[in-house]
Image (cartoon, rainbow, N blue to C red; front, side, top):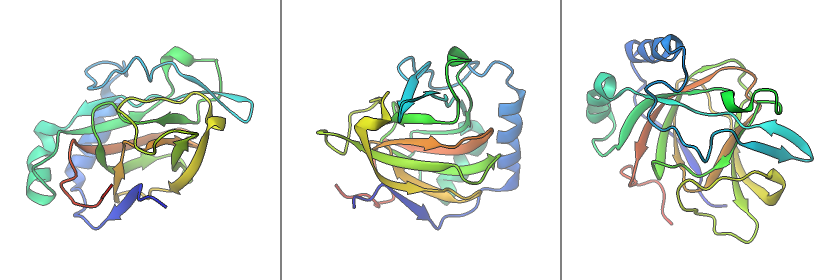
Length: 200
């Protein structure tokens, strides 16, 4: 089985940054305001799984670089490309078009690797799932999206606990299922693999 993710033994994020991030996403009335990665290709996706229609969620990100960039430099690495908080929400473009509990399979648009630190979740059984599409390479070009989950095969999954760093290879197709409400996480994105975990 290919290595898709690794739970990392890294310093816990100080509460002051967690609180700042939670307040930041709650103060933004318009989820598209000031976010870093509005991605038309991943907005408004209607996906299917086993003949059931789902309105794929969206994941607006807001910069935390000025707030906790130095902490990341001092405690993890200086080789990041961005530090942000992501607030996974139902897409305003798909209201009423399907159940909004899945963030559909994709490869990331702005990074090849990601350290994710979940800070808020309404239900603990939200699973991050990694996939391979039929007759396609495991590692995909950036911003690849899938609309039909019956064309991909699950290769791994992880139920990410709160306040735990998980390092992911985001060039492998991945998504999240069973998001019943809130899912908020700190993100540290990378163009390279400074932690030396993934070897292709």
